[in-house]
Image (cartoon, rainbow, N blue to C red; front, side):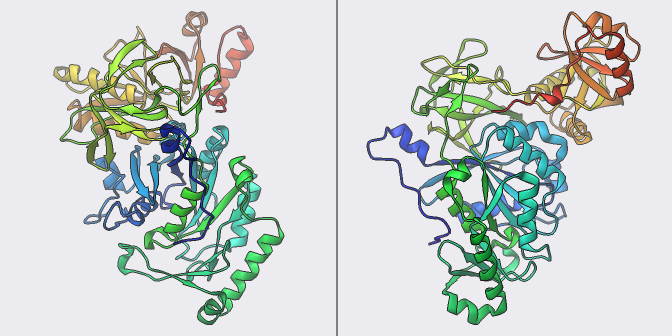
Length: 541
């Protein structure tokens, strides 16, 4: 048994059943730059929790396995995650809910939604590259949402940077004090094991064939480690003592207050250090947390049932042509078949079909507790950001939409498939895959799509062709700037050269403008017109 972190005291025997179950939940996401090993780590966690029998890294090459959490054809072909999946497994007596995040920068809006559903995050850092651009963007979202972060330095089996150098970078760029729980024995590329900083022992890793099975761990006393590793052990101990002198030991209060980030070292592809990550999640990650409502009133986890939808997805399995709404349970107990209220419409919603996903596999969920993620099948009227509740009414804050940066007008290639075309575009809009905007000028047959990055358009083409059987044509629009406006300003803006006003499906008016210079000219000449930059207004949690 690992002693990387001291065990957390369980909920008291007098606590309510809901509170006891909530205290067992750890709901987290893994954030990283592309190619840092996020999907590989997710699968390694499942392997070590005995949820799967073997691991296979994603390389996007013929004959290679895809990871459990990657399900879309595009994901399997390219070896990237462009959607998000929720997987539940158990480590000892703790229920882990890992919500996989898109691994590509073009899907930052989807990642923001996922991070609204978790209580903690693992920030995965490549040992050779340090903190990369996308990692820092995702860190900033975690900061805004006040999510505690555990840092994992991955790929320590390959040549990389000095560990103290990486600690300095984390401190300088994130403002968090790194407090390593483990410290590497052997430089990056020569991974002998780690110092367990809580016990002073050495944990030695043994490589397995292809990293497909759990790597055996051997605990060594300091004397045994010195005899086996020599100078590498001596250097690791000296650096660990230096960290202690600098005050870089784990403190739970500072971690939960988001002043520090515990650090672990791993090689996920070889399954080195993965058990330590699970132990850290178990011992120090926060249990299911209460969520504030629109009036900033916190609904305790033991109150009546409530949940919010952070993801809507169809086409996850060709055998199930249905639509799933992923709901994070916020309070109370969810019972399959219960009738709840849809806060946005006030209408009843029967939860007859509730499922949990494990890759392409599905299983029926009878009961779920705060922190759990449930897939509601055929939730046709449920949209991203919606609230469901039982008993006392509650509405959780809606999730903001990012400002699109790229624009395409789309049309069906074949007029005979226009019904499928409309259904597909509406479905992708509801899921939040793309932003759909319309105008009387263009009509319903030529909506405008807005995206943060070009790969979102590729997903639209792939899904419209293969899932909805409605191939389409895309034409780029030469607009570089989008601003939110209002109904009062829309007529004047529509008459302005270099501006097109569209209406998003949620009723928001969007002004598309040819260039930043044209925007500045309009703001100078007509300051009374409303032009709001949505990108500057991602709210704190």
